Amino acid sequence: MSGSLHEISLGVLLLIVAIFLLAGIVKGVVGLGLPTISMALLALLIAPAQAAALLVVPSLLTNLWQAGPWAQARALLRRLGGLLLGCAFGTLWGAAWLGAPSGGWASVTLGLALLAYAAWGLTGRLVRVPARHEVWLGPLAGILTGLLTAASGVFVLPAVPYLQGLGLARDELIRAMGLAFTVSTLALAAGLWWNASYDIWTLAVSCLLLLPAVAGMQLGAFLRARLSVARFRFCFFLCLGGLGLHMLVRYWMP
Image (cartoon, rainbow, N blue to C red; front, side, top):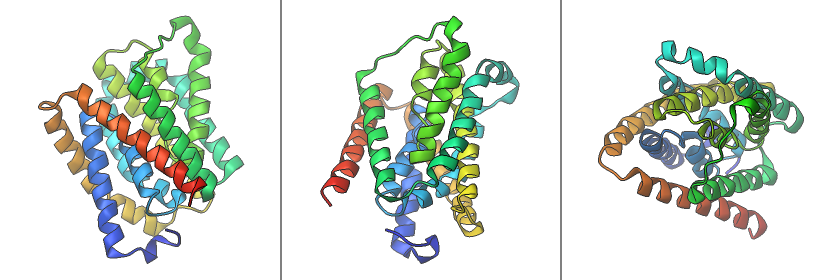
């Protein structure tokens, strides 16, 4: 679906609300997935640049919430400084170089990113990052993540595997992902604004979509204590892989 967000029907708007509710549930259970699920499903309804613009406010505020309490995040900020700067630089560089996500190439990039993310999640492989290499691996992972963010609106690869390879405790890892996603979201918003893909109307709709996202997170947190997280993650990554494959097939065989 193309055109301005002003032109979307009530039915599509309700589907968008349902997507953010679902994405919030996933984030509440596994600690990530809100922008990934949102971009994957929204791209079936609206243009990729519009989808990326809508996820800015829900993603930003839910990740700020996830990154807290901030008193405990200061040490992580120092350790992850290179990664965070790399994410910001890579996203802005990609926005200036590639423009806003649009056209068939954006769908292909998103489809490939989803397939790669699903393959990584389903294999369950964890690559350890030696402490002596963090000084250069962090910025490199950040820049690559930023470029993928600018191209597809998804900012999980390779940042999340890198963070998991640092050997952080569970709560620290959740907090670290919140920090990385916060920086990526802010940089994505700046890139969209720079490419004239973010207006007041889009901002207003994005703010309203915070409500189903937060409601979903609360429901996800409730379900997390009652579900097998391992089984949920398996279904989550399997569905993402299917969505990515569908986007590629739809592009090559319209």
